[in-house]
Image (cartoon, rainbow, N blue to C red; front, side, top):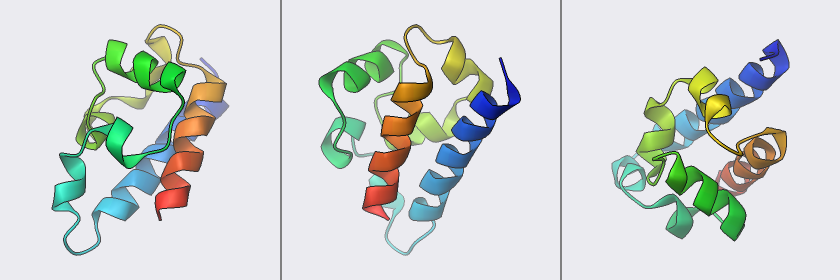
Length: 88
């Protein structure tokens, strides 16, 4: 795994942490990703297969482990990041 892939994951998780530090954001952590973020069906299915169903699941996972999950690559991470940025 290259440094840039891990860095992208870490930056995406950092964005999520930033969103969840705002007042009243505790509720966000228990919302299913599919309900909160506008993601493609493919990305939702990939995250679900990796056991990532809630926003808090994405925060708790090791960034390097994300890329070892089946079918999660650069495009999926970019889509997640863009969806998170749109929420902030």
